[in-house]
Length: 184
Ligand code: NI
Image 1 (cartoon, rainbow, N blue to C red):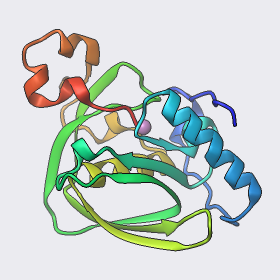
Image 2 (image 1 turned 90 degrees about the horizontal axis):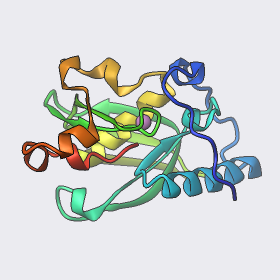
Image 3 (image 1 turned 45 degrees about the horizontal axis):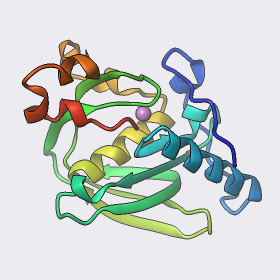
Image 4 (image 1 turned 135 degrees about the horizontal axis):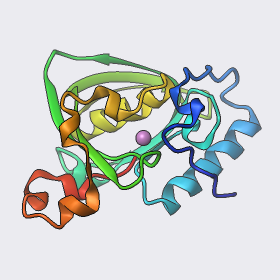
């Protein structure tokens, strides 16, 4: 396993549509997933998409820590290839997000509150889930990486883009969640 270099905003691969994974059971995919897991853990992230490690493939990993889950039940690390998302209903929530490709910054991003998503796992199974809240948010954020989108391009008000350290120094940080936006 190896820790991989993370592409930062401005790297062209982050603005490109990623290619579908042709064979989810390819051993090369297993090796990439292992390296991405190590990279995500060492960066204290809760999600990572292949373009962030400069691989233009439709592959994401994410997890939901139990303290961030609406029902207290976290989601263990999930590896998803060739994912598809559909909004369930038209409700949206706005919350702070961070991104490992935009270190140190955070901004308020609207996302679908409820989604359905599906994709392939490395053992070739298809998984299909419904998600809400933070779980739905992290999946939307990661899949956006596959379509060449970074969160600032989803923000309604670019004025909320801020340095996490600066927000943490201010009183509002503990109440609006900005100080604990995980990078994904
Ligand atoms: Ni990200």
